[in-house]
Amino acid sequence: MIRAANHSDLETIVHLAGLKRARYEAWQPVFHKRAHDAEKTHHVYLAGQIGQPNVLFLVSEEAGKVNGFLLGALVGAPPVYAPGGIVLMVDDFTVEPETLWPSAGKALLVEAQAEAKKRGSVLVNVVCGPKDAPKREMLLGLGLSVASEWLVKPLA
Image (cartoon, rainbow, N blue to C red; front, side, top):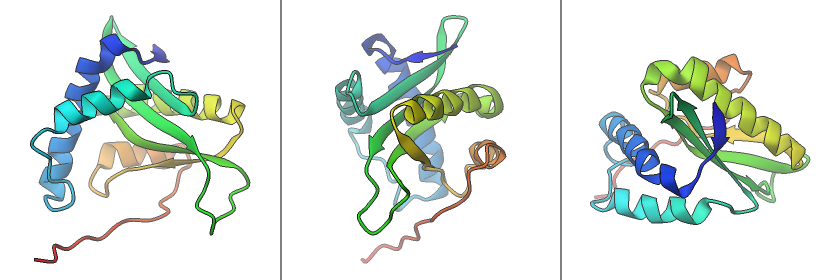
């Protein structure tokens, strides 16, 4: 079941996001180095997103347990690009276990895209790390394509 996130979901969402951050940090320890207070900071941030008019904050739930979430914002494209309307920018988006990408992950994104389209969005932009294979496979299967990747190096 896909539904809107609420405040009672936040502990689980923060936990799921922490698992994702740990994977991403293992893959790219420079850019994705977790802050010492990441969970507390993320909890506060997420709480402020619930109910915002330009935000889509959804959870996937099975047997009463949240197993994934998607947080997206309806934003304007940078002024140097003209996709033809507003963009659904999806940054926080994960499921657990990762085997749920083809089911819960897909359902979250399909629902978010449908709602974004109703609100005038013409494009979806989903953040996905290059080593996040199950998520990437699901995204490519839904017709998304890679638009950019970031390369990082410490300037120590």
